Structure formats: structure tokens, C-alpha cells
Length: 309
Image 1: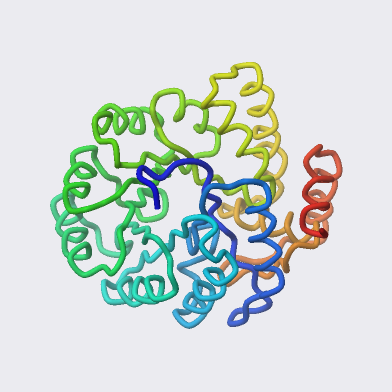
Image 2: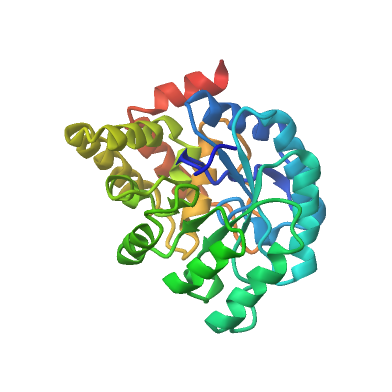
């Protein structure tokens, strides 16, 4: 894996048939769909991948099958976040055995921790991991925010980069300023709309959930941002806004984004729309709204062509 990690790395959804069974044909179609449109990596078992909702057995099967399908074509990152240190290490060992390139680690999300405890946890984990690791800053889910100094100290413990899903652009800019002279530390935004701003100011890429559906859109936006083609960036950003405003607003529930993404993929025939509890499938009316949005989207014809090829 070249450092720093760059580009568009979709947080792959986990195609499921039921609570303990993968949709294996759907997984293969989805991986080929995103790789066929030029993504630069794949992130398994993140929030959009419903990682915390899956059993260890299912997580391990997903890692094994996905790594076999990807077959070294792009770097594979695996989310190992858990409330248990040993649980994180167990998944990391499977990821290493299957050929994944790095682990992605959010703070344990049950007991409240201060910044010193957070750094101590990452130091302890880093000394035991069989893989390089990235920091996953997701305070909306873990309820633990990081300071820039905390990130710097975890970098000293060996972190290769950070996926920042705080939604705080000022914090991301502060990370860019802090690590501007560190050529190997990747600054990756988890907020889709921040992608151009991140690249313009020295960031390295994004982990956009919408890249499950429209990977080519985000790859083009990344490339236009690198080229500083402001006219193209504006055009593509409007398409991303359409996804935000139309697709992600269909469900009234707080976890609407992963449900909308999986529903859209089901509408197009890529994979099943089963959601691991506590999340649930969309109802028929909501699914119809998703289908209506996709019919109006320029990228749909390419999406259908790619996965049916």
C-alpha cells in the first residue's frame, strides 16, 4: 500500500440475506461495481457496513470473501472497532490472515474516556496489532471526540492516517495544518460534501457512503478537485448534493444513510436490502421514492450497465 493512502475508498455496505448469512453474489457484484468505476481502495465493516451489528463469525466471513474477490487490486481496510480489546484483535488477526492491508480503529464506545485514556488505549492496541492501522474519528457514534494533539500522539504510536467523520471542517483543516510536513500520514474525510475542500487544502481523499451507488461520480469529483477544475467540481458537487437531499432524506430515522444506500443497491439489482438489527429495511413507499430518484439520475444507466456486464 502506497503512503499516504489517497483517493476514494467506499465504506462498503455488507450485502445480507438474513442476520447470519451474506448475500455472496451481491457482494461480488458490488465489489466489481465499485472497482469497475475506478475507486482507490475499499473499507469493510465501517458504519455503512453495519460492522457493530454483525457477529464475529459473519465479520470474518465477509473479510475472507471480500479479500478473495478484490484479490489485491486495491488496498483493503477493515474496521475492527469494538468495545473489547480482544474482540478488535480477533478481527484484526482474521484481516491480516486474509491479506487485508490495514485496520481502521474507532475508540471503544461504551465507557467514557478522557484524551489521556484514549491515547493509552491506542498505544496498547498498536503494540498488539498484526496490521498497520488508521484512526477512525466518529464522535457522533462513539461519543468520544479527539483533539488534534491526541491524533498527533496516536500518530507517534504508529497510525498511518485518520478517517475523520466528525463533520467538523475546522477540525479537519487543523489536522491538515498539523500534519502538513508528514508525507506518510493520510488525512481522509468521511463527510462526502467535504471532499473538494479537503483536497484543495491538502487532504488526501474521502470515504463516501454514496460511492457504493455512484463510485464514478466520487472518483470524478476527486480527480476534478486534484486538477482544481472549479467548473467541473461545482457541477459534480451539485450531483452529490442531490444524493444528500433526495436519497438520504427518504427515511425519517437517524440511521437513514446506510439504509438508503442499501435500498438503492437493491433497487438496481446489485444486492439484497436486508439490514442487520437494529436497522430495518425501508417500507414499500420509501423504496418507491428511492427508485424514482434513481430513474432521474444520469449515473443510473452506467450503474446498471456495469453490474449487468
